[in-house]
Every structure is written in structure tokens, then in C-alpha cells.
Image 1 (cartoon, rainbow, N blue to C red):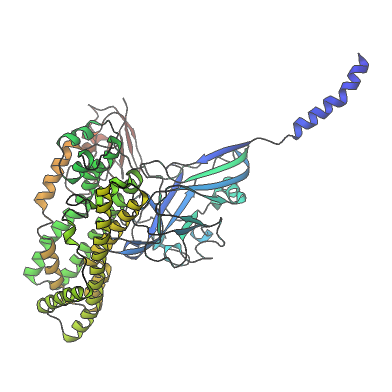
Image 2: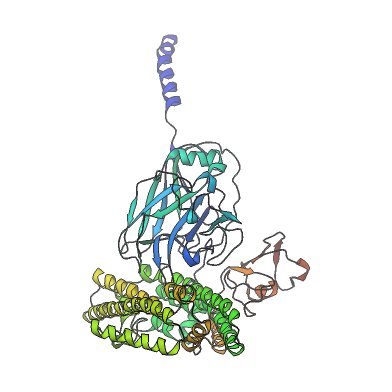
Length: 600
């Protein structure tokens, strides 16, 4: 027996050594969700002072809108504190890229580390408005410019070189997750010392041309497909407690079985209702949620943030004309332009670019929605609006427009010489894009007639969307080039610009119509599970709908529509004694951002 133990001892020793030397298992850790991800788009030019911390999209490239073009980039930071990680073996960030209607070709996207000098950028909580203290194209934080250049754009100063991972090409017709590997030691440093987590900078290739643009879903996007950091690591004790970050709730889509959606499908009216329930589009109930969302939540934001302020501006402009108050004209025009840009954000960026148009619909549904004769959004007036005009006809149209301006606007000969040069260029662009719009509208309609559902139909629909946007851009009297021409280059009498705006918009911006729309929407409006209150903000009509963009002005308004499980967020201190809790079971947390939670 003793001899057997002696023989077994070397074997047991070897097994023990082998067990102790076995490599530790590698585990996967994923950081995602709006509570642990700070992400924000930076948008330049006329959007340069606005924050997009609660926007649903991240951007990289150069973009075209209805009134302005702008460069775009994005910032991203993951909360890696408190992870039970000993050693990081690999790490990647994942960005979800949807199909795009306005991107026209491949875009090269790179990821860089933000420099230490810019590491104190603040995400913010707005979705296209100025927010003191939050990041914008011009500032990284309150009264704090970027270390190098606006937009965090100066290589080697604002962000570190080289890129952290190989450049990725993203294409307009494809959607899915794009992955960027990160150096393991970088993520290791975020875990061991969170103060070194300065964030990531996402940008497109140098000198991006117009439509070299790429969109990604942010952590606030209602799809839940926001940025992810996936870490493979050997587990171990956490280096410290998990930090709590300021965070934005996500945007919410109504559930498909909500009674409000069912009521809208029954009694709603208008183009969006026809899209959702009519035979032309053949949308499923899930797809129909998007037109419902546009017709209610997006329409409310558009009315509150853009059209109601613009309608009030018309009244003030008329008073300026009657009083011949030229100084007031300039201030009023700035107000008008700011709200037109806001309209571009609220409607254009949250409908056309936010994923549902190209991401959720089939090619034939997209073609129908955009280009079906007398039905599609761009073809509702028929293909006859976009005939193929010859060069000679375009020159005659330009001469007619110039003659109209010369007879109506009292300008000097010197001013006119400058105006004529620019207007010929602008009008030439307008009619060229009108021709291109008509070309692709005919292509889409032909494919719809033959029942074609291939990618060719999607490409033609995308080109129809793109060229129509450019057509409207050059048609508008308030796009950036024309605004700059009137106000800064020629410096025409502002009364002419005011009258031009009134002539074009007086019949469109009507307060009585907007308020009646709000009343109608209330019949089938779905309230999200998070409502916002901003006390004292009386710039919008009473009876808001509980979004960050349209806040309630009192807690009582939010309580009136809240149900069990609703969360009410209040900006600023709240007088708890003023809250009526007789009919609601409220749990109240006092503090700067007081939170009221309704419990079942």
C-alpha cells in the first residue's frame, strides 16, 4: 500500500500543477443601452450651436437638408467602470447602420480616440436646440471651445492619430452592424482608470463631398440598436464601483396593440392614414406604426416647435411692415430661419433619415410612397409638374424669374448685377434638379406598373428622394445660399424679403388650423412611458404631449395623462406640496431632476 502511494504522488503533483497552470476562461461583456452610453452627433454650419444629445442618429460625413448643408461627425463614450474584468483580450465597438434614402455612394468611416484636452465634453439632453453646458459643433461644454477647431475636427489636437481600427466602407443600400476593433489596452485603461476615458470620435473621409454621409442609430433610437462595446476578457474583481452617468431616456414607439393606434386607423384621416391602411402600400400593422407615429408624435413636435412659432412670426412681420420698422425685420428673419431649420430637423431627420423609411419598408412600398402618380409624397401633384425641360426652356424660365425680381425689388444697378449672377446659378440648379426628379419619378412609376420589386426600384426611389430634396432646397427662398445673398452679399431692403415670405407662406401658416390639428391629434395620441415637465415654459400652447421637445409646463398636466408605470421627469426643483397625490400612488424623489414613478 505504501509503495502504491509513493507511485501515485508524482502523478498527483503533475495533475495539480497542470490544473493551476490552466488558462482562465475568457468571458464576454457587452456595454450598451442609453444609461451606459453617451453619444451625440455634431452638426456644423447653421446647426453649429445646437445640441443633439438626445437625437436618434449619429452622423459622419457631409449632409444635404431642406435649407442648409452641413458637415457632421459624432462622439461616443462607454461606461466601462465597475466591470469585473482582470484582463481585456479583445474589444470592438458595433454601430448599426440603416439603409439610407439620401446617401448616394460608399462612405469611408473611421474611429479615433478623443484627445485628453477634449475629454470633458458633455453629451447633453436635447434633440436639435441650444443647450447651455452641452456639446455642440462649436463648443465641447459650457463656454468651452474645442482644443483645436470646431467640430472636434483638428487631427492630433482634437483627436489622436492614427485611427484606432481599419476604416470601414458603408453603403446606402445595405443595413446592419458595422464593427470597429479597438486596442485592448485602451479599453483596459478605461476599466482601471475611468478618468482616461475621453471618448471616441467618428468621422468620414477627409474632404467629404455632398451626400458622402452615413447615419448610425444612437442609444436613444426607438429600435434599441444603439452603439455597443463588446469586450472579451478574463474576469476578476472590479477596480471600483460603477459610476453613474447622466443619461437620456430613449425615444419610444407605440406598441402595435395600443388602443390609440387602433382608434387612429379607424377615424384618422390624411396621407399618413392612407399609407397605413389603404390598398396601395400594403403595410403590415407593424409597418403602419411609422405613419401613425409621424401623423401624431412627429406632427405635434412639428406644430409646436416650427409651425406655431412661424405663424406667430407672420403676425409680427406684418406689424413690422405696417410700422416700417427695419431693425425689427432683421431680428424676425433670424427667428424665421431658425425655425425653418428646426423644421428640417424635426420632420426631415426624424422621418426620412431615421431608418423607418428605407429600413422598414420594401422597395415597392418605398416606390409607392414616394412616386406613385397622384399618391406618393413627391408625386401628389402628378408627373406633369416635372417635365423634362430643354436648356433653352430653362434659360427662358430663368429670365422670367429675373424679370419678376427686377420689377418687384428696388435695388441699385450694382446690387442687381450681383443678384443676377447668383440667381442665374441658383435657378439653373433648381431646374436641373427638377429634371432629375422627373426622370427618376418616371423610372419609379414604370417599375411600379410592371410590378418590379428589385433593388433597381429601391435605387431609383432613393435617387427620386435625393433629387427632389435638392429641388426643394434650390426652390426655397430661405436656403443658406439665398439667405446669404439677400442678407449679407446684396443687403437688400428687408421689407422685400419679408413680403416674399408673407406671399409664399401666409396661407400655409395659420394658427387656427394648427390648434385644430392639435385637438384632433389628442383623440388618438399615445403617451410614452416617460413624460417631461419644464415648469414656467409658456412658449408653447397649454396641454402638451409629454416629450422633451414638447414639455408639460406643470406636474399636474403630466399627472392628468399618466398611467400606472409612467415616469415623470421634472427639470428643476419641485414643490412637492403642490402635487396632488390623492388619486395617484406617487413615489417622489426630490432633487434637481425629480422623478415621479407611478406604481401599479
